[in-house]
View 1 (cartoon, helix red, strand yellow):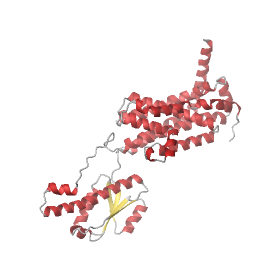
View 2: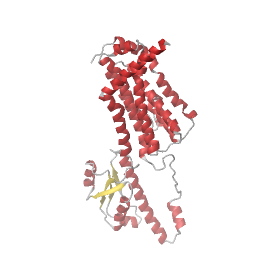
View 3: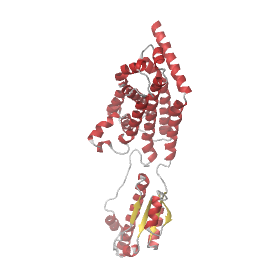
View 4: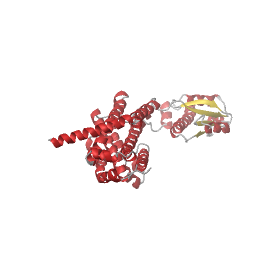
Length: 393
């Protein structure tokens, strides 16, 4: 009983020591609280409209007839397109794109209306800058759509003049009618699509960096031996007491962002908030454990933080939210299992977004559980590092 009480007192003293370190070093406040909150509010406010609206575009209308002017007005009426200027020629419009004034421009050559009315198939062009992928793709879609609609309008007018009934005209112009029903995100809201991966990915980055920094500074400031002495040279007690305050803070931040997304902003979810919190808890613990593992493999403050930063940045590309992992090279598909964000993204996609039973997510929960036990492989080396290594700047 005395031994247990002594252990608890020892653990309490170590935990108070870590809390004091967190409270007195501003870097912890910024990386654990301020920066994560900034990321949460920045991305959700940046995409609060759901989809970019009124993207600036230009027009080069060399025909300048009532028909082409109506075409331009219809294009300007689209939600995502805003015709901000008319240019005299292609060179002026191209320079405007290069200066970043517009993302695209629509080119209408001379005699477009005459060719259109005489069924001589006129050619219009649209030039899109894909230096910014999303605006370019949206404007390309609008310009392609308006071009198709104009052609159909002329064909429909011609058929009506020939006396064909509307039902037959519709069947000829649109043999198959498409009825689209986007699932889970019917609004096609980019905030829902992107924030649910970017925000937890950034939080994971902060967790990995803070974990390795907090361990590495024990060596840098030559406090590692005192730290281990307070823990009775027990690496398990030393590491648990160090991680506990950080775990609590990061869990609070994670639960806040989940509440903000799914309760306040009403992002779609098909499971209980308790299940969402469980996924967030496993995410935080797996990232902390992975940070400890990284420091155990690379017992250097600079090297371990660099590796964690690299791993976190690669997570955004390999998690699957921008490009499907099954379409990647088989070697990359296998490598994706080594990134905690990939497993969390699959849990979000299957359980939170689609409401699948937990039985379907067990490989991904299992992978996060493997990350959690990884530190036990490097604890002996960590103990040796803390007791014997000398920090070299």
